[in-house]
Length: 168
Image 1 (cartoon, helix red, strand yellow):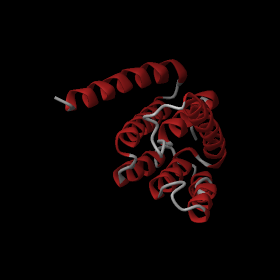
Image 2: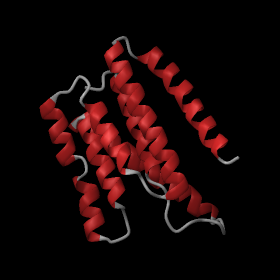
Image 3: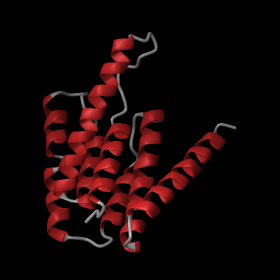
Image 4: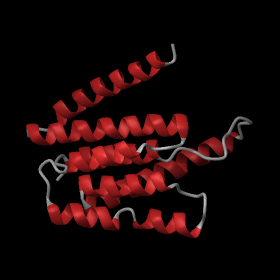
């Protein structure tokens, strides 16, 4: 019986992203790329909330989506530079950021490029800090030690990509 909730969440994401992309994009190739990218971010967010992990297949699929209408220089610079601050933080402070988050940032940087990747990461981290601040302010007894990062990052990237209209 638990699987029906996952299926409903995916269907809701599918409908939401379809409507948003139909309204936002004129180019069908960019619309398909955006749809696939947003769906993968939504699935990664859901899995991160439930398990605090990000399956490797998500990273691979985001990189494959990044091959659609690719700008190779922008994609490679995004792949290398966007995850760098996350890698440094994971290296400096053990347990702060997981390897899945670093790999996800590399895949996202490849998919959306350096500029959108950096801006999306900044907005996503800002949203994360605000949400954790609100949750910790409430001082819930059920508050977990770790908080999922992907939902905030995903929202940051969705906002940036929709603001830019064209992904790459």
